[in-house]
Image (tube, rainbow, N blue to C red):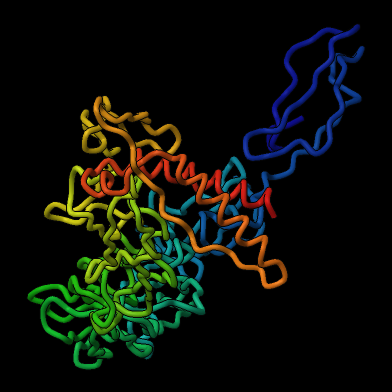
Length: 485
């Protein structure tokens, strides 16, 4: 087939089997094709080919440009042409006029080489997208369909209703929003143990910030000025205004003192501080504590709220020393005027140390009084010698209630015992007078047998032996009398 139909020719071949398949030329597409065979007459026959011009699709010739209509490449006539431009929001930074032609490859190419469109996102300059809304930043430079712009509130303001802004086709930031509300300072003490400030509001203008003047609560005090001023700052905190020394509230002190001056005999409270120190009193030695409650350091710097009763310890009734003749009564160990007690030794004992005075001491015992008090009772001693005038001597003896020393005395040679025991008053029974005289007679006879001299007893001090003998005689007399009755 001739080349005017936009295809190639068959090469030389031979009858009997050679075949030829044609192809379309540049700028054309094969739309129909059958192979040719070399016939007996020496001609290629039986085949076919149809070539259609290359088609350019309906697409933008470059990115972000308007689309061209579908076109064709045809070398026998003018190829299809297209005029394009950048889309809204995009700017042309190329050198051409936007004219394109459909080339042999089916692509839209600039009509003049290197003079096509260059479409890029249009710019949005740095700007405040919400000039009517204060206290936020601006959007920086951006481009159409580029990164979005999210605003932020200035320090001291809290954002809400946040929506990002986009760079529009008109080169302006649009479709976003933000609301910036001033931060508040809570109604609370600006420092510990200070009076509370009211709700405050921050403002960039210091003259418009909420100001709060406060002082320490009752029971606390400042080491410097009694009051201080605070402003609500950008973080929503109360900030002291230009302090020379930071305002702080400290517990008021309670000085060491006696919290119960009307009572006595107890300890004092030491130095302390309000709301942090307790004081428990203790009784002095010699006193028992009761009704005990701790004292607290009060807001006025005085120890308060506690109690204590100190009762003197008692000394029990009883003898203050062994062999004492007197039992002391129940006594008090009150150190301002402790109970006192005096005693001597029992009969048959003698005091060898102390004046016999005792005092009730703090541990509840009768103790020797200061400056020579006390009592030391020891058994009396009977010296060796005659117990009576003209009597033979006794050896040394000792008094002991259970086993006293006994001396059986006799008159010295040349002497006889003329002692007559005293006669007791006779018992007269009105119903039996004769019986009473009978008892008296028996008693006189028994006393005469005792053999001791009353005069000798008066001249010698050996009472222990004499008293013992006399007691024996009287006991015998009572027994005889009882038998007689």
